[in-house]
Length: 236
Ligand code: C5P
Image (tube, rainbow, N blue to C red; front, side):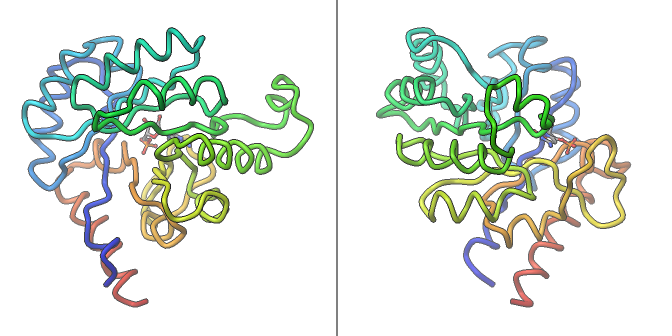
């Protein structure tokens, strides 16, 4: 087994509407998971308080706020996040936004992740962006730009992970949502891959929501994913 397969790559998405639901979910999942993603829903409901609570329990936090604003505003907001002990923060992978974020997190433990192209975007959104190429081309171009500007990592769908890894090299962290184990309901997700495949393709972390949070036994669902990854790497 490689070292990469031995670290626990799971980040559970706390897509819930209150701090009390988040607390209950973390308790049900138990000690197997040490890393949680707080996205816009929980953040707008419970703010930095729930983030501080998670950090206070020794959990790592991925704050998924996908910042996109003028450099001064991004810089000041990132500086606030950098003080808290949050580990990952997302910003859109646009040059001026990433530059401001990277400068503002300097000297802290905060790592900036670039969001290249939202996975919900289709060809008509490319028109709105004024980009004439394909989504895959824009993903790669923005991932390369992120690497050039010293961004710490990128968020990539499992189907993009291999191409993004080739584009950015080994130094960057790749965080991959949209994974599903074989046989698990994909819900509204169309372009999914298994957790093990995403890791093989170069992901360092996997963001997993419903497969774990909606399972009758969330802790068991975590064990299952870890087992699948270990088996996939053991056979390599
Ligand atoms: O589908 P699931 O519940 O596992 O999604 C977990 C998280 O991943 C959600 O917070 C969602 O916002 C994010 N996600 C994403 N891109 C996708 C699918 C899900 O960023 N294609």
